[in-house]
Image (cartoon, rainbow, N blue to C red; front, top):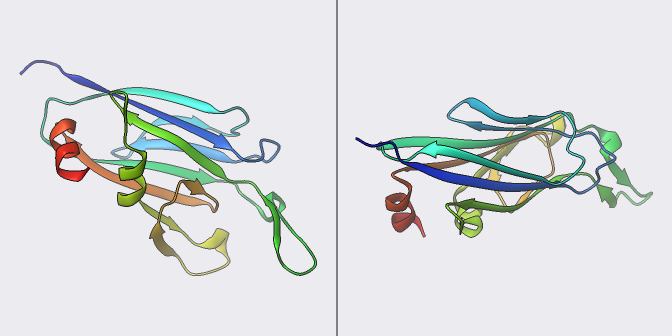
Length: 147
């Protein structure tokens, strides 16, 4: 079987770069990206093998958010909040953001203030936690079945 790769490209931005938010990307429990403070937008690229029938889990993990990252007014309304925003996700230059948000699960516990939940992911990581996206290779077959 020949070696066949597919490109993955992701862009992430911190809505308040003055706030230190740790971020990592895991593919099948292996770290493929890490930053201890997202300041500038991250435009990350990675090649993965596409010639084997394999199930994969892509995870986006945010840590280190504290109460200092959220400003609340006297009425309890959020005035500003640092979060990580997924701007796009592509495989082989095919935008899969809509499919990504429909399939992904966002697991968090409101930064330790409430019980853990699993929610739909809309593109913003606002609490320490992880976004899980499951897909399989060959990717184009998976894409046909899921778009």
